[in-house]
Length: 254
Image 1 (cartoon, rainbow, N blue to C red):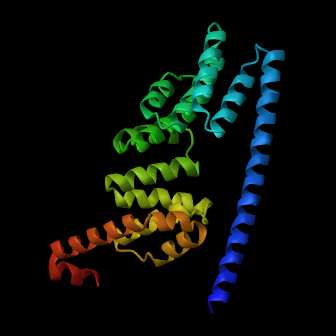
Image 2: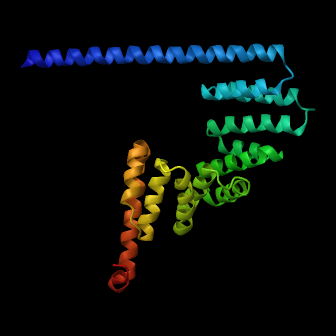
Image 3: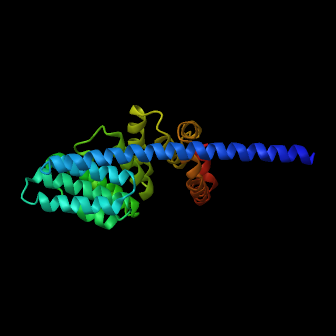
């Protein structure tokens, strides 16, 4: 019996070592590819120092590699180089800088940077990022203002509509939240997060909700698992409301 257990442990250890080797190899390959891309962009900047796109692209790569300090430094330097350039160039670089701060979870700096963007083409994108930054800070009222501003030019954008739904849900406007989640699910029926949050709204509104949660579990199991606390909170909220209404009110809905 002890021999069998020992063999099993050895097999598991061997498997773990093999998995670790594969993971290390994959990570090294990804790092090598990223370094090659970074090196290529550095060469492009050297060859074309007046092309602002190269600075933006390099900063984006650095953010992907979580090298926020270097990305910030690069874009601050670029803003100095292109100080006399037109609004589109400067606003593009500012947008990149805002993204660096957002990725680094420096939301106040991100907000300050995105607020400086007034180029028409980039402004809606900046509103989206402002909404996301305020959401990350837990300020849903301000987030809502910018999400609605973004929606004025992105009416059918699922990302924007989902963001509005999330803010309305956080603010307790469940019926309105349902409308926006329905718009998202019309174009993205396999959106796990939207299905889960639509299920929460349905639960509060007294609608059938099981199907939404089934789809959420199927399409985004990680988010479904993460949202269990929220689900419990909503269940408590529904129960408290039922008790407040009393038996007479409840019988009307049965």
